[in-house]
Length: 424
Ligand SMILES: C[S@@+](CC[C@H](N)C(=O)[O-])C[C@H]1O[C@@H](n2cnc3c(N)ncnc32)[C@H](O)[C@@H]1O
Ligand code: SF4
Image (cartoon, rainbow, N blue to C red):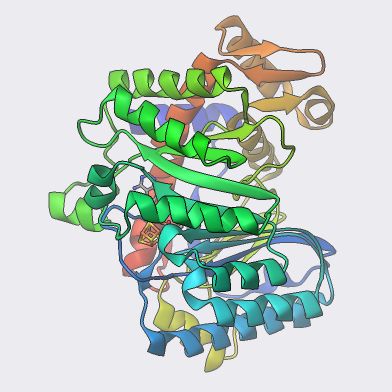
């Protein structure tokens, strides 16, 4: 049923001609173009403990893996520099894994990027409670990180243990006392909700604890289980397992109302920002980006592509073959590009009239009109914004469709270093 629905929606929006197939990258000619401005993503896949529910491309931290990985990363940056020269970098997002696991090597890489390119924008990084210490924080500050995101997940020891994470509630509080001293412009906390049998009061208690830490942004993800995560393998599931719809609705409403009452602004269907501070922390909504590292995705104009997920092949391709480790790519038509843009604006819950006028077509207008009619969105002075109901449905669509696509690509990429084709 979901597949038929997906196909109908896709055909209506982008037409039957657009193929949703990633093919093995035979040549890298699509990189032969001029580039002036881009965003960067850097993937550091190492984690000290591997959480069983985690779908990301991550491996157990081993000291001996670090030098090769960072030499390869450095080579990858050189190859891009040789192609594009000193381009302007609008933002850098360092994700993982847990990038702070190799802090000194990371410092060297960021310094290299700053020397080679013209970095003008924010530098954001993901980290975890166990990696918060004065040494790491001062190194991050020194390289210009201004946005810090900490994976806390819960303040309830029962759920921290359920996720297999190795810290206590008092470790979380200590970590945030340390963070405060360093005055990062934006600090985000990641929380997970909808644990098996979680009660609404437990969710509210987590939200309160996060708010009381005085951070600028809180991001709340429902726990989803991917088939290729350890939990997924153990449970022998074939699809992503989502929490039940009714409970999900109640929990989403609880979160939405909580942040509204506490004067937080919604900056995406999952993130809420303290209204008194004017910065946001987001990784995925950028239109054009180059991803460095194993498994990193990139989008350059009309091409999406992914590096190989295999750490070994990533390192060998760069260090032995002297070649970029791009595994698969897909061409994007201008129509698809438009809907990609529209999707991310919905994800951010707000579309400015000025942007819409320069971009939209009749289908986007029709969808917006329908959303307003169904009270899923409302028109304000110079923008359209999703209502609580609307953001819940977009959040659900994000889970059903986008995570399903990610699941199809990532599950193959985790098994094969250079697959022939991935049909999504
Ligand atoms: C790469 S991790 C963040 C940094 C660090 N590795 C950590 O875990 O603290 C990105 C975030 O994705 C979320 N996440 C990971 N797996 C998830 C899952 N199965 N369901 C919901 N959220 C998940 C977590 O909130 C996590 O903080
Ligand atoms: S959730 Fe974070 S710490 Fe846990 S395995 Fe995934 S990336 Fe690593």
